[in-house]
Length: 185
Ligand SMILES: [Zn+2]
Image (cartoon, rainbow, N blue to C red; front, side, top):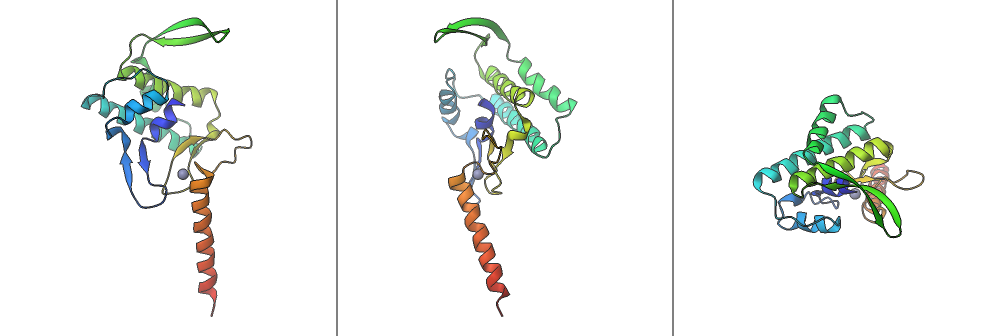
């Protein structure tokens, strides 16, 4: 999905080194991200657009934080998301692809306002049509990666079981071992 990868541009080292990086500031990150999302490439955003991208990221991140705590977005927040979406007009269309008919929204123009509108729309679509209970923040406090849990029994606690999952298992094991050693006379 467009929105979760975008949110995770605010990166924290899951191994607990305390390192973090705002990848929106890294030259080329957005370009690579657009490519990964199969979207047309754009020039680097100007400082104002970069600021707007970061504001959108904070807005959605705030909504995710509330949602994982079971709080629905309020009217003001919804209004702000709608404002972002209104800056990206689309043309509705019917098209033929891979042997079947589909409908879709084609952007009127292609620029960073449109990208932001698409990100906002992808998030709006997830919270309206997906299951908000599947929106998660990784349980590793050093990681805080945002993801959509698409497992069948909705049991995914970590962004990645092999990385954060194992790390937390090791931490719990060490904490238990230390606690039992401390109990020894
Ligand atoms: Zn994680």
